[in-house]
Image (cartoon, rainbow, N blue to C red; front, top):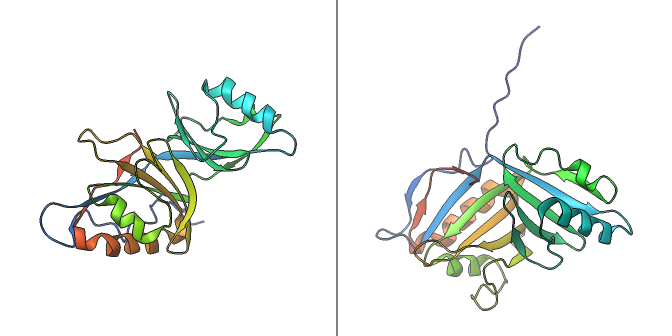
Length: 206
């Protein structure tokens, strides 16, 4: 019997080419794919939203977001994904066993290989994102920790703002379904080309 070996590959393997793209000079937008992460969606069962919130507080030490926000914990990021549900984003292998904490209150769905995570920054990051989304990304309207379940180029995404870079520039993280990731990646490149794009090598989640 033939033996098969399955290689784990990113949906962006063909599309992501590290280096410069678009206008020459200092890049206005930086795009980097983040790999090796766990992503689990936690969804309250009917009538169990309060119990789920208590379980989350006991497990992570902070309240899970009940509005469009992203909350940092010592070992994960909790990202609002809709009423009575949130994502748990962590470094690969760290949250494979969340089930016991939510056994009585929530259903879990492992989305680790169903989504692509892209980090977006640069002086023109907001301008580029504004071409693709109706979300108001002004710092007053979308501060650090803000999140949104929205669409870009007719593709459903989860977008949130994490801590600024050391140089003070905002950093936006985007989760997209793997099946639409390559198309969305090319759309972002086209939207950012006039500002110059620095495409980073894929990185692991810190």
